[in-house]
Length: 185
Image 1 (cartoon, helix red, strand yellow):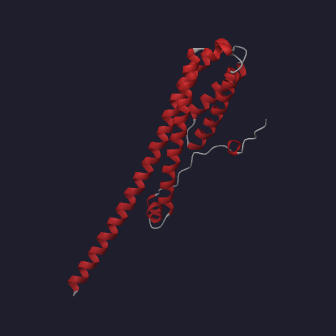
Image 2 (cartoon, rainbow, N blue to C red):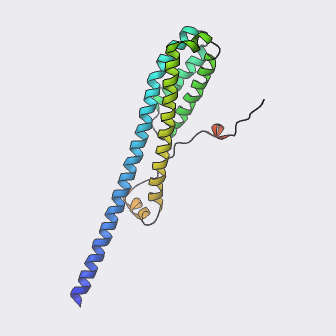
Image 3 (cartoon, one colour):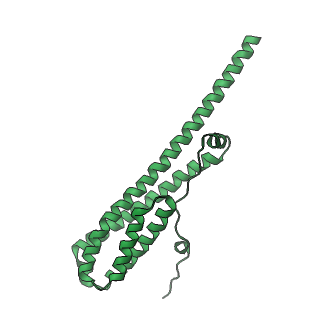
């Protein structure tokens, strides 16, 4: 009888150790997916940042007196490049998106600029990059959701607490972009 009891206890211990190892490895995998998905956003932001100087030079030739808009785009680009965490990157990215919208609004006033093939190509590439950034943000938030759920749900929350797995921050849009747009005719 004692041998059976010892075997049962050993099996239970092996099962518990295996469960802890599985939960720990799952948390590590999810944390690494969060880091990887943030790096993908970073790659797309760098691509956009690399395109902006070319776009600015093209616009400068046509709209030299629109200095304020060009400086705003340059400053916003620098903020994105200097961001060190998700919150800073999100805020800087939103600032840059707004500055680029202003730049394209200025371009509407210059028919020759709109017809310029370099400008059109850069605008298309930026638009494609914006789509990729949007997808990368969405993917990042999906991965953060899975990771945060694992950090909060029982019993993996116990393992997360013991081994120092902390929740990650979502990439969020600013409040002004969440408002319903007002349409007037």
